[in-house]
Length: 453
Ligand code: NAD
Picture 1 (tube, helix red, strand yellow):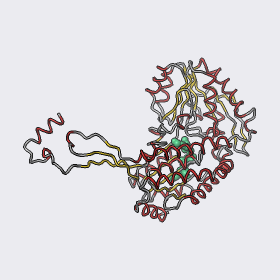
Picture 2 (cartoon, protein in one colour):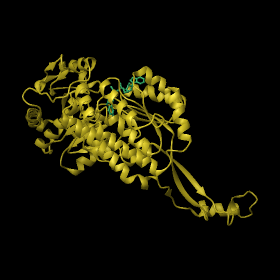
Picture 3 (cartoon, helix red, strand yellow):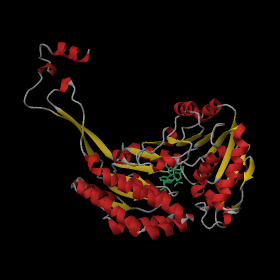
Picture 4 (cartoon, helix red, strand yellow):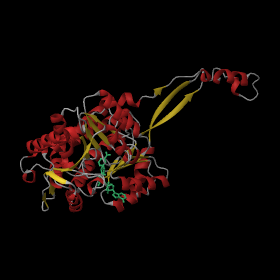
């Protein structure tokens, strides 16, 4: 491992990654790689997670294509130094921010969108002129193997290397003299990563998870809300970091919302989702058992069936849930939607604020004052008004958490910014010298008082 890191670091020092031309070439290669490997990627996603072609294409391949294209289009302007204003004290100088890559970046990826969440940070890191070591998740081994093969075919290991393995391998990587660590995964592992990085003062981005609420107020467009919630929750069988984790619904519209959600579950996944060949499975037995145990909470009003052999759990709605139920203790990360009821929006705000800041929040309701009330009184990573998940696919919106749901963000320019050190430069004139700053200046103090008040 230290050989890979050493090779990447010394190659980086030689300056190959600095030019716009080089970086653009790598992004074009990445685009080509995505096309060449489209079929193996789809097959691997089917094998490891039973992802349908539609889901695999929409949430992994199309997402990455758009991200790569956006980087190619904007890279030149992003790389330019940013000029800043020159205050009176700096008269004669030019002031700007030079964009500098960090060096060697470690990207640690999870298994739920194993292609997108591995390669989207790599796109940003390469565009910003870094070298990358990618550690995919061991829970999706076929995808991990395909990632290794495709990267090896398109990139030399001194630029991008894939290191496969479990937490021991990751721990070993974390001991290396890296320049940046980008981690996507769970909160407990995020804490381990940050602690390890802290020992060497390596900067980190942590893209974590948590329980993301969905609030449906009494003035929401109920049928549409139901459709968008069902889509956001059960895509990838709920194994989405920003999926609605639980539902908070105003008591006046609860019955109607549940009725509509049941309708859309049947429309999207059929009368028996467990027999739908395109319905995503739960990644492994331990996650299957963990999620199945939640089925004992509350009253099941939809789904609740499981197939142990195939690791499938049908889209499930649990009614009459309270905060003390097991299903409300941790992030669900599966196709189980608990429903809590409220009378007053401020109750919801208080309950959500009593818990760690969520990665996402979705609010359904027409009144703009209520929308603003929620936005201004709950802190969360990002989200939607009257929709779910959609904010993540706009490359102009930075994506990341806050508090326990993460540190830093990426996507589009935010990715370039994340993997770039902003070096502040004052380029001073040598044509004259302002003497007021020197201790011997007779009018220095008077000048400073004039400048600074
Ligand atoms: P995880 O934290 O178990 O694993 C993530 C990565 O860390 C894997 O590559 C794994 O090998 C490695 N790892 C695991 N234990 C480790 C340890 N002790 N030391 C060092 N490395 C270790 O997460 P997961 O199960 O792969 O993914 C699910 C979690 O990720 C959920 O909490 C979800 O919300 C979160 N997530 C967040 C985002 C986001 O963008 N914010 C996206 C996807 C998933």
